Amino acid sequence: MLLAVVSLFVRDFMYMLRIRHLTDGHLTWWRTFVVIMLWEFASALAPGIIGGGFFFAIWILSREGIDAGRSITVITFTSFLDGIFIALMAPIVYFSVGRDELFAGMNTGDGWLGTGFFFTFWIVYTIIVLYKLFVAYALFVNPLFVKRALVGIFSIKVLRRWRRSMVTTGDQLIIAAGGLKKRGWRYWWPALLTTFLSWTARYSIVNCIVHAFHPGMGFGNDLVIYGKQVIMGIIVLLMPTPGGSGIAEIIFRDFLGMYITVGADKLALVWRLVSYYPYIAIGAFLLPRWVRHNVIAPIARLVK
Image (cartoon, rainbow, N blue to C red; front, top):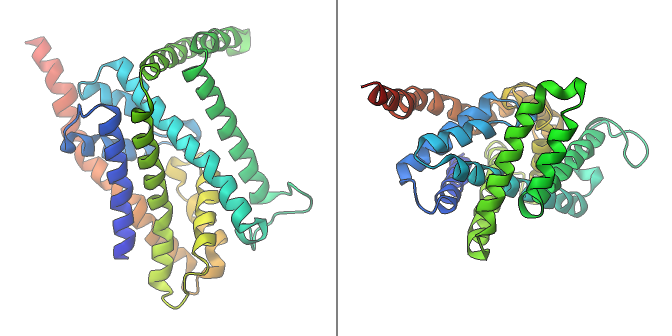
């Protein structure tokens, strides 16, 4: 359990290192901690299917004194880096562990795609990869074309109500692309390294918890458990509930039940107590103070 908590700290510390690096050290360590905790708080309350705390994170950075264009660049780039990890790690664990091990005990159906979780996993993975390829093209190839395409598509009568949002999205992509074109490999490699370390630590938490309650299990199944975490993490992104609440616990029980001899529901609760609920508690504590300092106080000074 101590290692599970250490993994949690490593995850957040890597996130902090990444944000400090991408903002060129603009934020102090304390301000970086506040930004990450509020970002995680927003992600815990917002469903992954609508982007989690993506837009809230842009607003947080802008209120921390980073101009809007740079905030958009940093948050869009971090989202793209997270997508790189998912796009690479999912096929790595799938082909190294195998379908039978990853989806053991689940309803995978007949045929190559099958049904149930196996089918859902590949659908969500494909959506993520296509979206990240779209973002990559928009960021590094032709952001203006992407903006025009989005605005054109959402000029159709049935989609017109979202046209203004697409204009804003296109402007954000152009700003982000302009900011990233000036950066070289020295900007990329620390961001990639901290991204992979943070996600690895995140998915290692369950390994630690399973060992804590099953000390005689040995380490032969750790790669399978880690791989199942990657699959679970991708599936939960499609869930409509805040932070995948309720559904994540059910998936945990179904995916890892074969390795758990104590109550799977109890272990799922331990997992969420370590990796989910702390962000809600910390965010609820920090948010009112942050709003007073970064939102209300500046408005009061302007009024005076």
